[in-house]
Image (tube, rainbow, N blue to C red; front, side, top):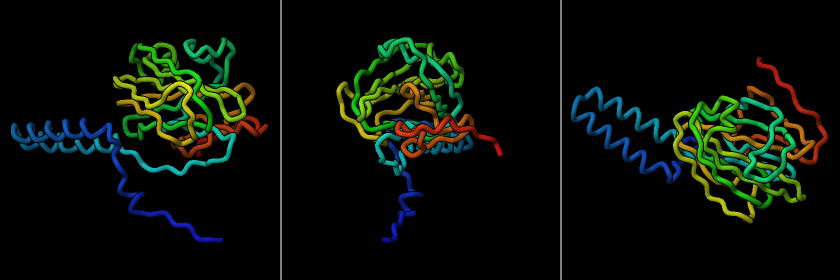
Length: 235
């Protein structure tokens, strides 16, 4: 078998997403102004500039490419798994589906990725409030961008970007009827937020509450498997 290698330099030197550069520049100018006022404030501004660059990092991910896998669209904590009706604006009916909610703190990567191969059927943006994204009611009340898509075998699922307590902008780069592949970047949220994934009927989650998910890498579910929902224990 051929030996494969990963560049450690690319692992350490994580690129910054282009959406972040205006913010990093603004933070840097602010740090300079603070330093002119009082040097200790300048150091605080420098630390905040570093955090801003860290927030907008956009690491490369290795996505499992087998058909049928549903991959996490977000980095963060698998905070809730339960039954819920998809957003009304997607037109997916009133039947509850299994929903996996992934909470992104301000220290997580916020570039979001497509969960599976398929086609975008409908996109719907809805303005709303900005309550804490870790609360269940955030799925209903908060600003959100919802996407309904069809998998390669014709089944449907949905994923929803939800703004959080301090998030004030959802960005996306998708269009109706667009063909997409698992792991492709489709958007980001500034700053701190949540992404919900609604699985097709009868598909069990392969993650447990409290688990850390990695966008573009962690397998949330397998459409071809009849394995029951997995359980997890904190150890």
